[in-house]
Structures are given as structure tokens and as C-alpha cells.
Amino acid sequence: MTGRSPSPLSSDRVRPDVAVVGAGPIGLAIAWRCAARGLRVVVHDPAPGSGASAVAAGMLSPVAEAYFGERQLTGLLLASAARWPAFAAELTEATGIEIGYRTEGTLMVGLTGDDLAEARRLWAYQQGLGLPVTPLRPSELRDSEPALAPRVRGGALAPTDHQVDPRLLVPALRTAAQRAGAVLVPQQVQALSDVDASVTVVAAGCGATALTGLPVRPVKGQILRLRAPDGVAPGFRHVIRGYADGEHVYLVPRADGEVVLGATVEERSDTTVTAGAVQRLLRAGVDLLPELAEYDLVEAVAGLRPGTPDNAPILGPLPDRPDVLVATGHHRHGIVLTPITADLIADLVLGGVPDPLLAPFRADRFFGGATVAASGLPEPSVEGDLWS
Ligand SMILES: Cc1cc2nc3c(=O)[nH]c(=O)nc-3n(C[C@H](O)[C@H](O)[C@H](O)COP(=O)(O)OP(=O)(O)OC[C@H]3O[C@@H](n4cnc5c(N)ncnc54)[C@H](O)[C@@H]3O)c2cc1C
Image (cartoon, rainbow, N blue to C red; front, side, top):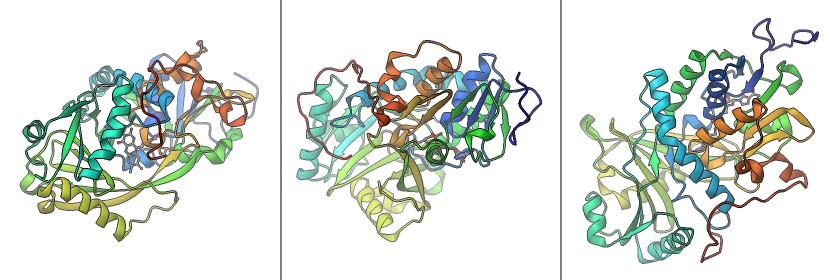
């Protein structure tokens, strides 16, 4: 305890050990891990779960998302994905809430010859990293997903890329954090000086920029939700990621009949839905899976991914502020990165030695303090840049 006057955001007379700013998946998972380890935790958010996670597809795809030039990030994605089975089981055990964690794997497909050539470049890179990508013969592809359009020229299986439903995950994390003793304060933090705690963790997604000055920018994603008619499950089981006449789309089937079809990647900060984006997503989706044309279109929405200049998250102390930890900039990967972010940030809060995995993701890399650690992956055999 200190003799400081109460902050505008005090939830309680006892000074918290940890104040988490932001109740998205990242902030709530950190709060859960810290509270479960006996710390007094408050979480500030005027609208928990209202950020990017409210629209996210929930693919856990370290293999399919292993892109050229991002080996450090791929290493972190793989390490986090490996924690997902235990994390999901522990969360359901703690809350009784099923979070839609599914392990059928991901099919990556190319519609035309050009699409397939493009996809094969990436698969070759991923295989060069030693990742499990199994090219399939056309007959094997059809056998694994008969609903795919006959026009689809070829595909590959990433069996270890799974999925979870973020709209179930976030309420489960909130329940787990509160059951472990974390207190939610439904208020926006205007400035770090408003927060009174031994350690502050900024996990505010795109809101981190205003609080820290770090280069986190909104990257807009428009995404659709469809529903199979008559309450049946979709006619496919795998997550399907495909190139269709140059459009890159994914289709995520849920057990309740929902299919998530996404997503655009736009350097914009508005959340309007445009006719052109909906048209492109639907055309590509239906080209890959013709039965989608008969589904109900139930939602078209946009969210803002917290992007960074190198597409990788920012994890660790704010430069010159050892009492402020940052966990933001998770961009396209915040759901898959939830378990590892929570574990490693909780370790830092408790004063542990920083895990070497964190070294490439420190905030000071944007202030001339870059560090490069081994990703644990071999040198790739192909190099280049596809999407940035
Ligand atoms: C279309 C789309 C599809 C995606 N698909 C996937 C996917 O398949 N797999 C995957 O891993 N990731 C995916 N993502 C990315 C993922 O959603 C994000 O990386 C993730 O949500 C980041 O989590 P977060 O908790 O850091 O931020 P957010 O989910 O954005 O939550 C931030 C929270 O902070 C709060 N907040 C902000 N400012 C303040 C403040 N000043 N005071 C208090 N609270 C504040 C907000 O209210 C919000 O609740 C997708 C994103 C989009 C947009």
C-alpha cells in the first residue's frame, strides 16, 4: 500500500496488485492467470468483449498463417497453438462453458490453376520450415470434403490448425477471471496515470495507442456469418482456406450450423460494411463451396485488428516504465496467441525471468532496441512476400 490518493478508477479500498486495461481475450486471459495465482486483479473496460474478438473467426492457424518473412511470429504462433488443447480443457473445466474448440484441421485449396500455383508457393515455404502440410491428390481432397466445388484444382491439409468460437471463448474467460477473484470495472481508462495498481497491463487492442504511444494501428476486417438451412450442421467439417480467382477467403464451420466467411484486410479505421466487400467474399465462398448459396446470410460486420509495423504483437514492459506491461498488437492472431500471451505476461507480473520467446516482441524494438532471438525453425527454402 502507498499513501497515494485514490485514483479515479479505484474499484476498492485495497490497492490491486494488477490492473488490466481491456477485457478482450488477451486482457481477460491475463486477468484469469494472475488471479488464479493469488494476485488482486482489476480489469477496466467499458464494454468487455466488444473489440476485434467480437467479430473474429477463431482460426488457430499457425501453419496456414506461416507467411514469408515472419519466422519469429510463426514460432510464437506454434508455441501458443501447442498450449491450446490444455488451455481449452482447463477453461471449460473452470467454467462449465463449451468454447467450440474443434480439431478437424484445416484444408487449404486453390480454385484455378493460378490460385493453386500461388498456394503451392506458400505450402513449399511452410514445408521448408518443417511444418505439417500434406498436399492432397484431387480424389483425396474430394473424399475429405465432398462439398467442395468440382472446379477446385487442388489442396493440402494442415491437420494441426484448429478452431475455437471467440463468441464463446470471451464470456468463458470473463467467467473464469471473475471466479478466480478478478474484479471488472466498467470504465474506460483515459490515461495510465488514472490507474492505481502495483503493475498495469495494457491489453486494450487498438486502444493501446492512445494510452502508450506505441505504433498499434487499426486494420479493418469485414466478415460474414451464414447459417445452414433447417438448423443442420454445415456440409463440411474442416476449416477451409482458399484462393479463389485471386481472392483469399476462409470458411469456418460451427457445430450449430453457422459458417464464418472472411475476411477483408484494409488499412482503414471505420467499421462500415461495403457492398463490394460482401460481394467479393460471397462470390469467392460460393465458388469454393457451392452449397453456401442456399445458406441464410445472417450477419455482415467489420472489426478492427490491432496491427503493428511488423505484424507481430508487442509483449513486455513499456520502455522506461517497468510497472507498465503491454500485451497488444496481436493483429490477425489474437485468438491463437491468447494462451501464451496470458502465461508469459502473468510470469512477468509475478517478477519471473522473461521467457526467451518474448525477446523478439518487446516494445523497445520500435524505439531502436530491437532484439532477435532464434525462432527454433529451420531456414526456409523459399523466400519472398505474399501478403503483408
Ligand atoms: C475480421 C477479423 C477476423 C479475425 N480472425 C481471427 C482468427 O481467425 N484467429 C485469430 O487468432 N485472430 C483473429 N482475429 C484477430 C483477433 O480478433 C484479435 O487479434 C484479438 O481480438 C485481439 O485481442 P485483444 O484482447 O488484444 O483486443 P480486442 O479483442 O480488440 O479487445 C480490446 C478490448 O479493450 C477495450 N479497451 C480499448 N481501449 C480501452 C481503454 N482505454 N480502457 C479500457 N478498455 C479499453 C475494448 O473495449 C475491448 O473490449 C480477427 C480479427 C478480425 C477483425
